[in-house]
Length: 222
Image 1 (spheres, rainbow, N blue to C red):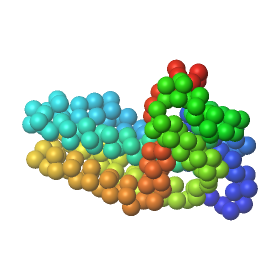
Image 2 (tube, rainbow, N blue to C red):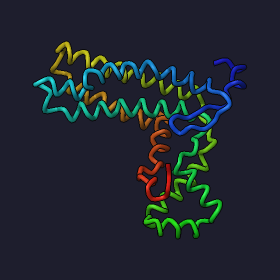
Image 3 (cartoon, helix red, strand yellow):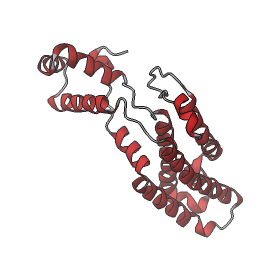
């Protein structure tokens, strides 16, 4: 991307947590780079994923767990690549972080904590929520380098291509003796990619900070 274009690409949006950004070109260009990888993944998904292909092949049925693990790794790659694209200019507040931040500002931690306890939240849950709010505030406007995201996408392309090729080999019943080993090798390579690529590691870490508990019924969320 030419240097002159950066002035037009300052603000972005993140789906599904939807802030209002001034310009949508940067995430759009980034997501477009991920799209071909998603298409290839969907091709394999239409065949039932590697797990489904293993289930349909007598020789591989006892190794279905390998197929599930590989399918999950591929989905994880694509989820985090899209996440990086959609959070180039920061991690927007979601409902929980907005709720906690607003109440901490208006009531202070002690009063808000008492209210949450009355609502049935444990001390541990409250601590997690307060820590998440700190994380959300700190990273609301953190920025990423698009070129480094593009590099991660380019690196991931190899794994998606190998994934598709493996599925096609199973369908063609080609080199079946090496299929299980190939699946395991690909799993190990992807795990190494998660550790070695700094942006993939960052995406995994950031998403791990989001509490997964259902909070809407207790606190009146939408």
